[in-house]
Length: 626
Image 1 (cartoon, rainbow, N blue to C red):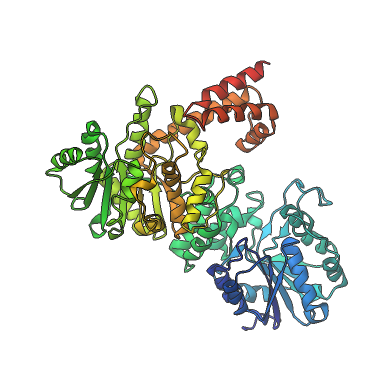
Image 2 (cartoon, rainbow, N blue to C red):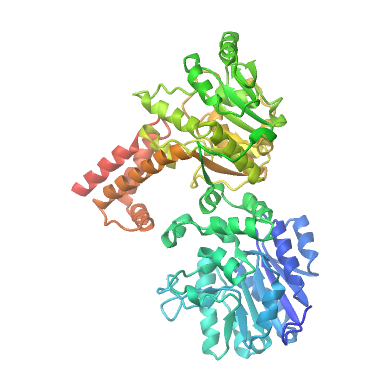
C-alpha cells in the first residue's frame, strides 16, 4: 500500500445488498479500486446472495458475513464491527465503511487516501449533505438536518474508534426499520453528534462553494464534482431517483450530464452502469433521469448510413393508403432492403407494381391475415430479421372507431413522422444506434390528443398481467410495475436492434398463436406484445428510448405545455396553485376527488377509448361549486 501520511494500516468494511442477490461487475470494479488501499477487507451482506455472486465477493475477502436483511446498512455495519471486535478494530489506523450505493472509481482512490492521510481529523468522508432547514424525519434535536458526511463512504481514525463514546454509540444503536430510520436516526445526526463531543471531521470533495445551490451535490451536480473536484465516485441512485424530487430541486439535467461526461471524458466504463441499471432499475426511471428522449434533425445529417445493414419491415393492409405509406418508405437509405408483408396475393401484386422503380431491394411477402402487424413482424419476417444491424418496423394505420377520422390520422402522423420523417432523419437515427451500442429500441411516445389522452399516462390499461406473463415465458426478469410509465411502442412503429429483441423472435411464433378477427381494442395478446418490446430489449441488456423528429417535437412541446397549463388552471379552481409535486400530493390526498377520478378511469380505460380530460375538468368544477 502506498505511503499515505501516517496511515499505514487500514480496514475496509463493505456493505452489500441487492434484491436479487446479484453482484454486478460495477461492484467488482469498486472493490478492486478499494483493496489497493486497504490492509484488510470485511464484507457484510444483507439478504440472499447467489452462489456465483458469493464467489465474486469472496475473491476480495476471506471474511464475507451473510445476515438477514434487517436493520439496513447501519445494522450491517454494526454486525461487522462486532464481529471484528473493538480490541482488533483499535489496531487499525483507519476503519473505512463504504457500500454498493456508489459507483467508481472514476479516479484512483489512492489520490483521495493520499490527500486525506495528510489531514489531521478524527473521521472523514467523500461528500457533504448540506444543511436542510427542516427535519422531515422528526428525529433530529436541532429541528433541521445539519450538514453531515454522507454514509455511503465514511472513514474513522483510531482516535475515534478507540473512544468510549464511539463504541457505545454502535453498541446501543437501535435497529433501523426503514430508509427514513437509517437517515433520520443515524446518518443525518452522526456528524454533528461527534463534532459536539470534540472530534473533528472533513470531506475529500469540498463543496462549500455549493452551499445554497443544492443540498446534495453528489446527486444534483455530479458532473461538476467529477470534472472540477476530482470526485472519485457517483451515486447509483442518480439513475433511478424519483423524478418528482428531481424536478422539485432542478431542471432535470444532472444525470444525463453525468453519463455523457463519464462516457466521453473519462476512462470509466459506462457498460458497468448499464449492466446494473438494466437488470435492477425500472426503464421508466432510466428514461427520465438519463433523458433518453432523442430529438433528431430532419433536414441535415453528417452520417453516411451505407455501412450498416438496414431494413424497413412494412406491413400493408389498406391499399388506399399505399401511396402515402410508400412516401414514408422513401426516407430509407438507397440500396437497403424493404420487406413488405400483405394479406393476399392481390395486395402483393398491387404493392409490387407500386414499388417498381424504387431504389431499394423490395421483397413482398404474402402472410396470413391473423395477428395484424404483430404477426407480420414476429412470424412473417423472422427468418431474415437477424441478418440486419438495425430495422425499422412500420405499418399503415387507419383508425375508424374515433370520429372525426382526423383523430386517428393524427396518431398515424405521429408514428410515421417520428420514425421515417426524411432520409436525413433516418440517417441520424442509424447514427444514434452506432454511437450507443447499448441502445436497443427507439419509438415515438404514445399519442396524447383527443380520446388518446388517457393512454399517455395509463398505457398499461388492462395489459400489465399479460405482458408480465409473456416476459416470464421468455425467462426475462426485469423490474416492472403498473405504477410506472410504459416504455413501449404503443403504435407498434419503431426502430430496433435485432439482437435486442432476439428472445421475442426465438419464441417461434405461429399465426395460430394470435387471436382471429375481429379483435378487441385492448387486452389481447397483440397488446401485450406491443407493450413487451421495450422490456424484451431491457432483458437482453439494451435500453429503450423515445424518438422525435425535430419538426414533430415542436408540436409535442406545444401540446404538452397546453395540457399542463389547462390541468393546472382546473386544479387551481379548487386548490391554490403550487409546485407540481405538491399539487399532485394534494390531489392524491383528497379522497373525494380521488374517488371521482377512479370512477372515471374505471369506466373509460378498460372498455374503450374515451376522453377523461373533459370530464375530469367538469367534475372538478362541479366539486368546487358544491
